[in-house]
Length: 330
Ligand code: SF4
Ligand code: MG
Image (tube, rainbow, N blue to C red):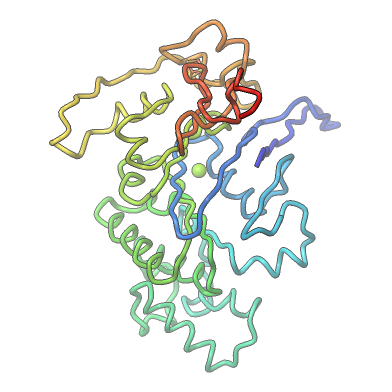
């Protein structure tokens, strides 16, 4: 809620602070148990940072994070260590996130060493279980990451993330580094594991087609802010925010039954720097529907239809809370 992650910009030999990169700038959303929330947007929009702050890999500049009712925004490192098993991350580049000098068994077993007290035999058993769960051959337990393909390496990363029976996993572009032919396999594995282990995912991706396949709800991020959040079908069939409309206009429609042919919306202008976002709507420098108010006032992120949120002056807050001039007795 109200999450901000600013990184200071410093200059000169005294490293004087001259400003902030507003990587995440006032973001609020829920993720429900057992769902997959897709988080989409162009590279540099702040989606990875958002995923990392939620896991408290960074200390947020402002705002709060609650997991399962527990506020983890300010918890000390010891308490955080105890909560750690419940919240894990699967990284984009399995190559870079796996220690090349460790065997697969050692990589998958590492979280167990830190957080559990298993005997040697129990630990090996658990490692085998995890290898089975992600479809890795047990006979390869003593091999090293470089002996595996990209897809298999991502399976190792997933097994490691599962070692401590997490509830919530941030998947940060988990398939972006993989061959297209392998991507669907890894996505299917993630879905299968979710069903079997009742996992909740934040699925970060710039691949809108893949997100349409895997997500229950989708949040769209632009320049550090969430501009739209909606149930998957609603978002893809009837995007509300002009930025979402532009993003989706570039994606081929997979369902030939749908007759509406989307016109490709070409955006002009560069994405402003997150160190210096526009005063009004962050999208006002590129929006095809920009109005005067957009340059002056930041549109609030609000519910405009039940379950649909957007930050755009084109839409009015239709929920009771935001209704102006509602009867006193309401
Ligand atoms: Fe476009 Fe204005 Fe809506 Fe921003 S608030 S997306 S500039 S119409
Ligand atoms: Mg990223």
